[in-house]
Image (cartoon, rainbow, N blue to C red; front, side):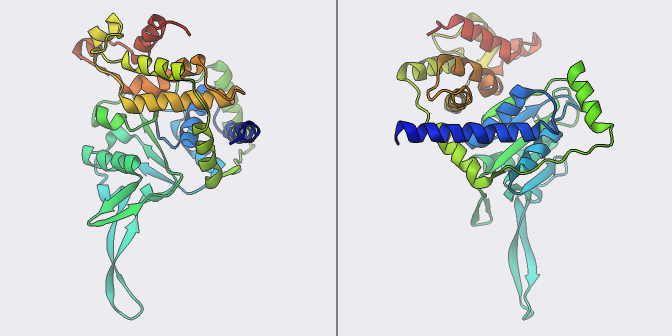
Length: 330
């Protein structure tokens, strides 16, 4: 691909990204970094875990995204009695016009292009596993038959960090299937004023679809065409490896508080996020700053704390700050 052709595709990527961001901003106030992370994951073909207290807008953001892209959307309200068949689907007996009875597969909500798994930690581990395996494989198997999931296929799972009773925290292996983990904070005074203006006045907000599913897939291909220098790729690898206490480059805090760090999926997430950030910054090549900015959302859920780290309330983001501070700038 020629440089001119690549630049044209990058400009088209930025235009589409900004159209989605503006449209979502009609319903979801503030939290620009969270919106950027969700849109980046959508374009890159990954999935997102949204964490935030009740009332911070997790469901609002997911619904706004579903309205921005002209694809199918389903919401799964996760509860302890939610069964695997409730999300994947099941075979049912159907009667033909000729009076014959046959088994026909009725697809579940997981077959939508955009799926909101609300309060995912409330679902039983077996149901969580079915959901996350489908995310990873882009297909589901029922009995002896496999069914491809549609493309694009994007799952937004939400959870409340303070909710403990009656929940089943996602195991590390399942957390690793999310490209990013994004944290939604409480609205500040300025954002809260805008929220009140939009929700307590007579005016209604209408979000229009601005992209098709095919255009989202094209954005994903565009991200992967952005080059990254070999030394920057090695720097990203070093930063990811430094999250593991068994690696030589790990800071003392990682050795003290971490049980295990990020793996290959973490490195992939960092590189994809860095490439997307480079495009949005108007550059055709990823830079060191892009890699460092990508670390928190790509790696925070891939750092597993040991008992000492949990007891002292160590935040993975703080450990990532120490890793970046220890790593030489290039």
